[in-house]
Image (cartoon, rainbow, N blue to C red; front, side):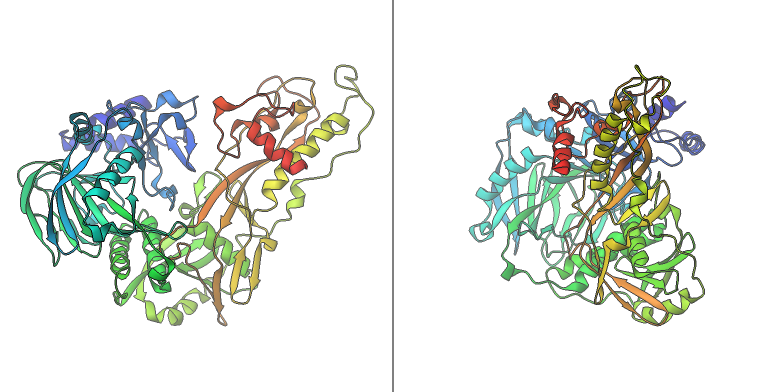
Length: 636
């Protein structure tokens, strides 16, 4: 049945099926609930749709666990290396909102000698060109539409048509060379490159317009990069009234195939489907280098951008929030080029309850009722779990919350929220933990040799060789667990108060640099070597956060936390890593892995490490050089 659900999904996605057939299929999907087949980018993935795993994504099949890889469909004949996976939308976070499909392989052997010719100035800061390119390259770009990689965007309510997002360094590099030659000289100053992330948009006649909006600029504070111009490349031609409307600039009614339009991102614009055929175009932006003197920072813009992103995630649970997110994005995009204009008087808030703790949030502000059982560290921990939608066990934080949307005057928030929360105080949901309890001291060694020579008297907990290995394993696990401000034992959330440092009116969250997400699972097997006796006492999820300080104020009744994780436009790092805690078993079993704890560490490296590059390690109990290097650093 699972295979049938998978195959019928792609058969029905081509369109044309009767509505009653689609309805029956959706009902069958809603009746199926299974566990994920694997984990990718922190998301559980299924190879067929279920009641939970409904959002389809396309990923490089080599990134899926080899044991289950063949279960996943390869729906694109043009790009057979892409596998279709289904994810739970409730698990999405800032890192995973968008599915960026890797398409560099598609163009790897194709000459991309591009020229932008016939430059025409449409308006101030807006130009059109004709793209000249080899026939093979033209054919590959024309077939992008036929890849059938379109997925509904999170803002589908405010835009017509379909789209998918892809990454192609080759196409961006070729366009960078062409743009650098074709731009008027004043626009070349500071030009760095074309963004390698492209959006492929498709509209059919009769689709809704992509409503009037401004494109949100790309911004990288560390590299001093900012986008200033949008690039549209029309793969098909047609006419509409108009097909592209730049407010205050020009309206294009006729567009030829492979027309390229470049315009200043200050322009508000709207796109309409062609009247006479399918409209397919690519969108990206031109990236420029800026100096510090060219940029100023407005905290209110950062706050609004944070709210927009937060409501994008919350719209999975409350679709009515999508319109607020869209309005905020537009307001922020305009504010990057001019002063921030006032928004609506009434704004959304969400009231959440997590295991008895009530709080109100809007993506920038988080309010908690004060009580003897709720500390500032707990407030900060819950804020982080909510903001990044961390997984507790197998469930995302937001899915564990009871939520309701409230619309109110933002200016009056300080007046109504404390009273609203006053009667909703609950017990602590994030108690402190003494991490040393995860690492009990080993027993004293005896003089027994090994289970072969001392079978009746052998005690693994007192074996000198086992104790030595156990101590090394503990050292490794401690190096990752002790610095973590938050740990999760299944769905139990615990915090380390020492990692939440309160200075003045700010909360500093301490932790090491984020690590690549890993998941460990292991069993142990028969054998007489020390590694056979080091098993997993607990599987601990650790959340490491690299975030700016969280500012707070407090009244008699309420804590009010404020923070801008994006700092206007750039995003902070957050990863979640799972660490196996070692324990000594007094005995061996007859199946599973012979070295359970070691295999748990080695199965998925804490670092990006190509399995084909792994060699024989000097440490006899570690097979992965990347892990070996880390352990050596720990031991040294």
